[in-house]
Image 1: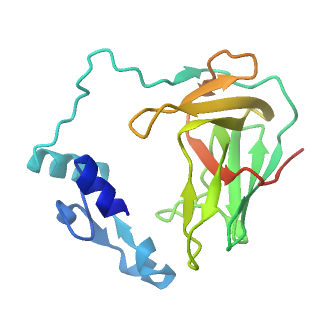
Image 2: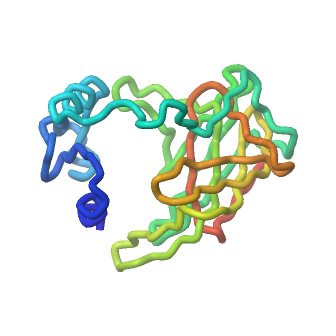
Image 3: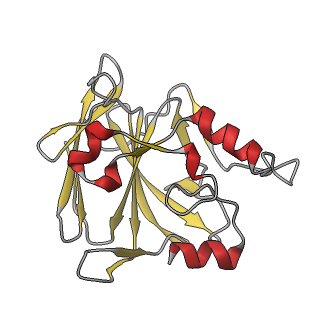
Length: 210
């Protein structure tokens, strides 16, 4: 389906499986034990170099392009306490991720599959300033557990930052549009400056916070 969409929509792409630009990627033999699909890597420098080789455009056609994102030094929402957050992703594998808030660093540290989420280069825990939970209509389409997820239109979500949470709405006009996020009162959502972990979950998924 992905190859069909790329061909039909004419998207410029760098493809580590069939090309073009497959030379931008390399396998990490130390990761092969986790599955070949988890062993292909690249770098920002390689992507930029390959983009230049393929003569892909690197600037928006619109001079006033709006990314639709706002940031604030303190984006803590005025809502329920969210110092420990458990997100159930559902699906046939039943993935669940837990985020623990550290008040000293002001970061959320995720854990899943029985261990901390770490950087494979130095084995240090990875922290996130923002956790975004987006509810979306989801359907399992085959026995492998592949999902069809509706990421256009409008639906609900939860924004988590600074040990607190707030209800939000996300919207996206079409597949070529960026996401828009608004607070419960309709005002634009402001993210904290830093990394963001985005959880896209089925409508029936459970979210626990305390």
